[in-house]
Length: 161
Image (tube, helix red, strand yellow):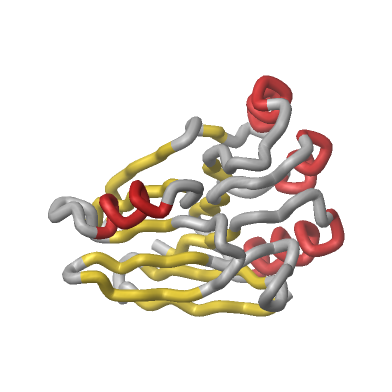
């Protein structure tokens, strides 16, 4: 399964539109947003995507974020989300507390950890776990970017916006 990964969009509508376009162009089967949308007004920009998200530490009006997710047929899972695909257990956590992220990365039953928060895109192997941070849609210290994860090949590709 090809999964689009993004995080930390921080109300940057132009880059959100670029990310959505890329995800549609690549025909992703799922999009994971690992938090920090910030304001609910940006959520309708994701309409038409198979979007699953979690909260970040800068997400203000959680009730309205949930409502906007519902309005576009997307799912907002709370502070943590896990699912299985292609014999992989995938965990999604924003990364607000590094100790929690590290605990997930070292958990022997989790194969992939997707996080955000640091705005630094990268992929690391920690024992038998693939740890992916798709960087920031907003762009801060690094250029704005998203990532693509192929659950069959287990490859990660980053694309600048």
